[in-house]
Image (cartoon, rainbow, N blue to C red):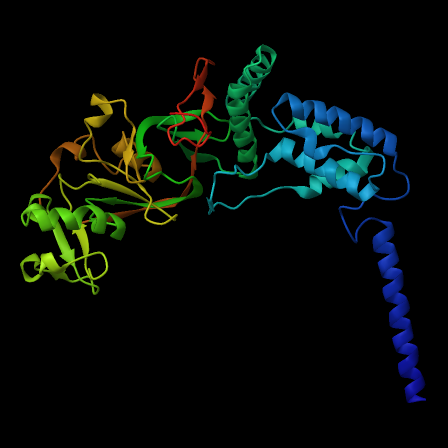
Length: 401
């Protein structure tokens, strides 16, 4: 009897599972990407798909990825349909961004619901309600003009920037910071694309490029040390010290051991030091001569990359060469940026001029982490709506600088 009861229970469980599986499959809940087999007008969906492709083509999306044929299953067609919808709304992750710290949110449920609701007929209306960033519409108009005049190279650059503006829809930030390396510009934007704080930057040289990434800015350090990266220390500082023992003193630099203890440079046999056996690191003391200036803006990666002031502020006025750093970004208005990020005037107007002696680093923690995008957009529009095309300073587009 007991064995019979067990068999009955197992059989009942199997029946329940089968019924449940059938129900989930039938109502499209088992795989949300599946298009329901019943009550679905393929011809209507294909008509909408063609409309979406025309809309996508007009804003610089390569629609070849979404071409469909009669032999596509409903699932295959549905995946192409929803993927195109998502690219129209959220763009693609820019291929040159190699480090991502900011969380992305893509509403795949929305795209699937658009298809299942009425074969996508509501999709275009829904897309029209998606907020556009800043000069997006003006940039689309320039893209149309460039295609009509056959300026395909410039049109390609505009397409990349349009994609970046769509990509921003993956993030719900009220305010964020964008450094565009080819333009050598830093801008703080609100969600609509209004520029709240513009300034110039000095970015990495071609052989020591600033990387492209998304991250958070978390805190500000006044009177920072410059902890010299090992690569710079070995390749640049060590040879100078070996040629001139007074170099460290002239640059207000210290030598630290592996325990971060300051070492007397006179106790080191510099002639015997090399990249292979150098157990120390260099640190530049805080003050007016520090390469980071008086303010450093810490990021949550990648590596030893950050924003900072500079002890050579006259470069912003004396030269148009904005690509001369080891990879970090020097900012033109460090006090204004610090006060904006802190949401209060923590530094007065005279902070940069006093440069007090003997100050130690002090950390100011932001009220909340501030989103940062570092990108390589070679085309954009200015405040007057005029198209600007920037030099390929890193030679990434295969043409001479």
